[in-house]
Image (tube, rainbow over the protein chains, first blue to last red):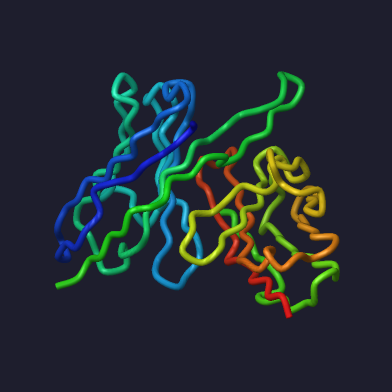
Length: 125
Length: 109
């Protein structure tokens, strides 16, 4: 079945680095743009980044720009998020999500239709 | 950055009642990129509505979405106990930056 599984979470000190992975299965990974979304404890959802299916375009939220890098390995069906210079405010559950385009050339619609279960990052000294 | 503002913050209703959730954008956005998501405690978000008004696969028809421009609405026509959750609207469009609303918590009395 269609599935996304995140891994790589853990506890890291401020200023440290961590790399998250998101393993995709059950669909043609290279056909889809992919997002990272995070959720701080007890708070709402925050969009983090998107990478296009061909990996040639990547966009970031201002809060992570210059510190986080999104990448993908299409032959390995895996999405990554390299997080550097981590701060306490980066503490959150991190989700990967598939960005699906549906419709026709007359009108496309988009949505995050498949989500992983999330992986938890805690930035603390 | 496009800001999405959801209201009310919390909605407390009885089973069978109608719930109306609002999502207002700080500037006009394309309906094609407006989605609604449901999140229950300890779970990942689940897609309910995409393109502002299309129901995702497997979503009961008591859920409906409407709106355009800067004003969007999620309606639950007859609340069921399992609809207790937080609901988020989301947009990602031409600005290449995504945003979520802060969420509306729906409580079933």
